[in-house]
Image (cartoon, helix red, strand yellow):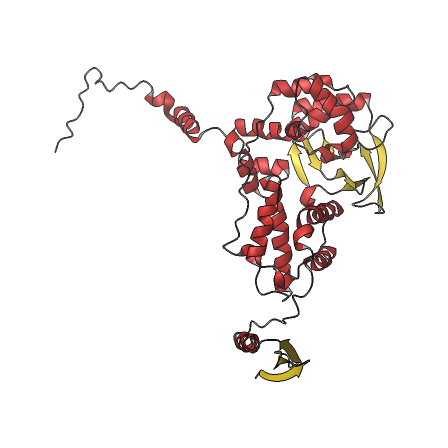
Length: 393
């Protein structure tokens, strides 16, 4: 049972709460006011009885120190780690970094959110990162609850921004403004739905020209300003159909620009060297660098085609075009999600649902196709020698 003892220090009273933790360790906590000591004693005994006791000192670690420990123990891709570090450094540490975990309350989180600037999506991701870290602190028994999950914390609203896919004409216009060496990038993006890094990492060995399939096994990405090979996003290898038009374009391209081996480290600089024969390469035979391609190849082609070089018109627009073509043709969300390499078909639905034909139009077409030839000639009139039955009872 916890007890309170009084002593004088420099002529001023001090109240020591002596208690034992559930594992039997003796602890002491000192207060300047007796009422605070009594509240603490009652809280300790109640928490021990409920089985919810936490070491009061466990939360005396700064958010930044704990976040860095947490991040060091995550088995994430190096580029993911870099993004999280940057997010914490820019959006989180300036306000929450120096606070003890035990000092961060729901009101602290709400005040921090109120002071954040930028797009709602950026603020939502920052909140999600902080919440994940504080949930880990709960699991480590450093704090009792995650303040981000309190009802008084209002997450930023989602950005309501619908994707407007490129038309086939725009895809063709941009493709025609690229030099012949780089036109294959458009065919692979718009015709297979590949991400930019997946286009850069495609090998002829991934293409089955006979069966008409492409297996997406790797991407080229930048880690600490160095190019590396890495698994596709979320380590999700997938197989996508190879349309005949893309097959023919790829075969013709490889006849003019034979693939050549490129060696890059796997996953991170200093990783195991991996040699891959690449379809798309730079003028000097090296793997393509997204920054260089975007600046020196893609944006000039956009301007020449009369397309504003905004973020929405990056190479990712080719994936959106691919998705819109499939959905317009009646392909299922599940199939589109698999071809795009999404881990969650629900995400695909949220992003592209507005591109799907309306249910009313699908219903009209379905009934017309199933019954149209049978019912289109009915007039409601009795034919020769026919009399409608009297349905009155």
